[in-house]
Length: 572
Image (cartoon, rainbow, N blue to C red; front, top):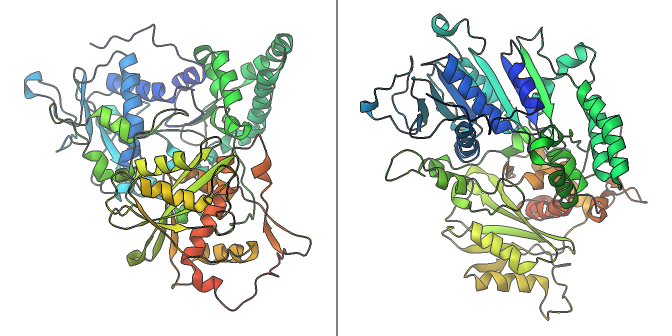
């Protein structure tokens, strides 16, 4: 029998809303950091085990790497708070010993490699959307749970998984959770995951402007944190924050098959997190990052920016090496090894150690050289790793790295060589910026480019310059990006960007504005690089890295006998 630990189980307000929402068949929870998503996923599993014995569900992730290294460890921790013990009350990735006499699901799996089984026969398939449908093909399940749904390909979700959510009405037809879809996510950035926010449209039909209400609440909460005196904080808390938080109401849609959409931010869990934690995060993070990560504010993108042809659905792709992750097994006990999975998942929070490496990336070809570009800055130095895949006619942007002052070249090279420590061909093609990279610092007789190359050689990597010559101006780079991302010319390489490893790179591209100088020529607006409250990893630094990679694979465009210096922006 499972005994819930009452001391460890204290639900915050968003969790209580979710648990008590009646009649929900589709739960969409867009909650920020520190709000307790993993605890609610564990609660859903507990309710399913308790009320639907021998049912079969799916826990889905964008990749096996995501579902096994991110979702699974936090879910195991959440189940433990509910009294469930791994290898006592349930097994992961292996069949329970026959001597235990556990029940089987009504429609159980032939293989338990990617399966969670509980004592009473309730089971959960661990499924990857990136497996091309093969992971869920042929299944008949009673519902599914998804974590970090902002990473999901909506088309794959509908085509490969939704069709499996069928059957067993004779057993569970009266259970309100039967054939439910419960998705959890942090706030989508850019256009990816925008379909999740569209699930909130039923509030507008009921006369509730959800986005405006949330923005007003977030503004008041941030004013409270920024207040200079305790008296001012107390006034804002009593007169503004508390009344607004009490007025917040979320409810299931009556028209749309019981859809229940809700949002939450760290303030909703302040009793557990503590005020000092919030103040520390406010001081540590830039305003932009704090607003999205902690306060769960909906971000904006630049309409018609410097990269208007960037299409996240086409260019930004999943690149997890699921075969590597699935091989992280426990050699003694069998099944998956949680410690190895956690390490492979990388850092979960700011400041955490990151033990992941390139073996978890399917887009990195270990027998091929890596191509790097560097953007030198006083506040931040960024590096972007890429690789041409000529057999697929693709140019892959693999991973972005950055260090902030006072960290510099040695720290950046250390991060890169650690991540690619298992790369077989330790060879680098350096897309050197001959203008800024050939500058010297007062404390070093060598140029920045020379110092970087020496640091890589010290780590036993071979490195050579990939000659780009003089870097063209913004009009040429703008046109080049249009041509490469537009994919109209079949002779050009197609650009594909790693969704997870290049999140900051893509964000920087989405937020890069375009304008005209006094002569009407196209310019990339780089004001974000001078703003103290703007996260420099999302400023335009990374876009200059991107431009260098584009120049390395779009030479026929750049070398065409056309003068782009007078290229103008024409608006209709």
